[in-house]
Image (cartoon, rainbow, N blue to C red; front, top):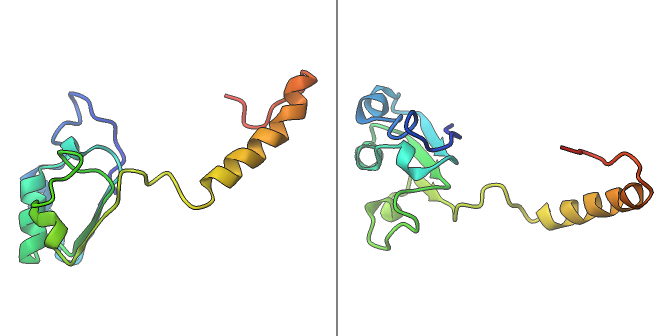
Length: 114
């Protein structure tokens, strides 16, 4: 599971060597940034069965071109770079807003204040 920001230290952190060291039954998930991964090496490992599968919420480039071979791989799940959103996200945000409305108006303590 990869959930890192992209910076000078993390760019390409998942290299071809690291991908080749993964076990064939492993499932790789990236919700960080596409440029963290050697995507050509990842695609090759997935296509040849050297890696069991992948869940990719991010790719490089984004959006992933329609002719990219990752789309055709049966062991890959590609999501539209919104792994933080679910069918309940808007409801939970509204509930938190209304739970904080009275405390905000009355100068009370807010829930989950940062």
